[in-house]
Image (cartoon, rainbow, N blue to C red; front, side):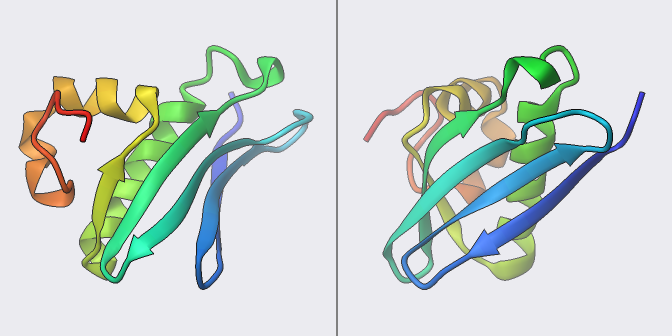
Length: 104
């Protein structure tokens, strides 16, 4: 299986984490906005059918979590996938703006 390559496309108000796999068409992504300094709102996770079963969404989330640790920002979990994963991993609480299982 090919390696997942993740990059970050960051702008002043919004951006996205992008996953690509060599030889496979399409790209997965987590899109985000910046509601305030020090916080990103993780709004949507999308993975095309061509990447199904390759754990691309989890790889994107892991990258975003590492980025939050490295850059020192908090994540507001708007995306249902991210909220669900966070509820399963309460040890990530220091990286999020809400408690695990919370939607606000």
